Image (cartoon, rainbow, N blue to C red; front, side):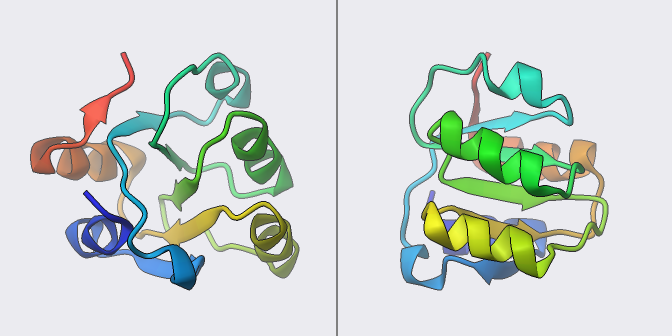
Length: 114
């Protein structure tokens, strides 16, 4: 599934990464614990989190995660956008909870990491 489809399914808003809208996502992982994210060893992973800060962007970069969905109506800051652009990371805002967002994507065919 590509990023455009992800945004449509979750009713999200693409904030950063418009040029990568056709990037394919195969797996999803939901966590607010960035230490758990650092243990991932998968490709084409989308991270769903409510942790809206620079640490989430840095963790995604270190884990080769190309897309982050910020759930629970968390807002992306200018600093987060700048860091994401530097690292080619797609950022999406979503009003739904982490649980509901993950459920919608799972139902649509995104596979879990575990």
